[in-house]
Amino acid sequence: MKRSTQARYMLGMVVDATGSGMYLPLSLLYFHHNTGLSITRVGAIISAAAVLGLVSNPITGVLVDRYGARAVVVGGYLVRATAFASYPLVHDPVPLFLAVLVMAIGDVSFSPSIQSFIAEIAEGAARDRLIAAQRSLRNAGLGAGGLLAGAALALGSDRAYHGIVLGSAVAFAVAALLIRSIPTRPRATAVTRTARGYRLVARNRPFLALTLLNVPVAFGYMVLSVSLPVYVTQELDQPSSLVGVLYAVNTVGIAVLQIPVTRLLTRYRRTRSVALGATVFATSFVAYAVLGVVSTGTALVIGVFVATAAFTVGELMHGATASAMVASAAPAETRGRHLAVYQLSWAVPTALAPAVLTGLLTASPTGMWLVLATAVGGAAAGVLRLEPRLPRAAVRPGTPEPEPGSTGAETTEPEQADPSRALRDA
Image (cartoon, rainbow, N blue to C red):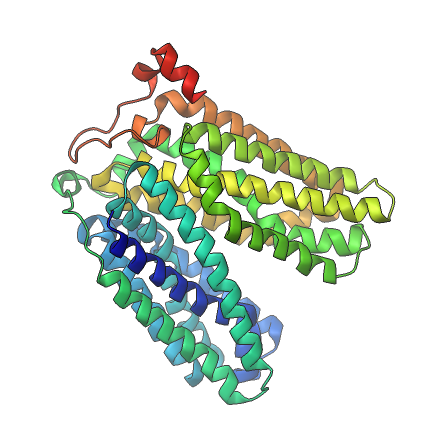
């Protein structure tokens, strides 16, 4: 991949993340301020629109396979830019629901289309490194956007609120232009024309297994924003300011360390790295559970930081590598459909996490952490067992991908017969 291509892509991600970071911290506050509706009612409307927006997920996969990932990424950006530009005109519940629904449709299209786009412009270890750089810069962009939003809100005026959403609209439009300028390789269409619906995805049992194994891990990712704040403040009786510091430890850690960690992991099988990352996740959950029986004091605070650091290490090992593995496991001709299905393993836990995790936390704080640790640990073991059934290109970053139109069913088993290669990759 040319450096100019990578530079344009990463600039697009930074602009995107900055726009998102400006708006995400104040989405509820903005509509509460602009419509006069209660925070509870605004939250209910936004959640309803987000759930309905998930219906567009299968359509995204079809559009990616038919028109190419770049077109869908650009279209999604323009849809979101339009939604943001309409926000200052929203003053009542129905227009609020419609505007947020348009935004949700654009949001839902992003993950499967951007992963497909990365797969189109980068292969092998370069794909892992590009995803790592994206995660790192997106964290930085989200932080920068949050700071800009904070500065604007300090003015305390309607213009400041409207300036934030319109600034986000401009950011998405600029990101669309940057992505549109990136050249892509010719797409394969032979299988896409004969594939009806998602039948090819349904027949790809290893990929479906990979999708299901990601569900408990996705719930694990959500604890930082859903469970941990409540656990730290109510169960461990620590000040709410500590939650912000813990969140900073995670986001700064990802921004600073994601690229070097992923560069190191490209030497090994992706399945091993993903499984190890999930295992570290599970270990951090056990550590959080143990903290519930530790007396208050310095040891407790240190323990919380250690557990959060372990959580961050697990995310560093799992996140970028898992994304690259899944993109490589999806056949090129139906990659959009495959990744749209995989995205459900993130979207559904994200939607259910507030209810599921808070319910478990209410029933038993220690039990919640142990349930998560067991489920995520089981997912790690499942990925290792699935390794022989995955395409070699998905498991080993340096393996060339099959030509478009091939079955893509080559597994890692033939290469495992080479003792020297197996020893090196173990």
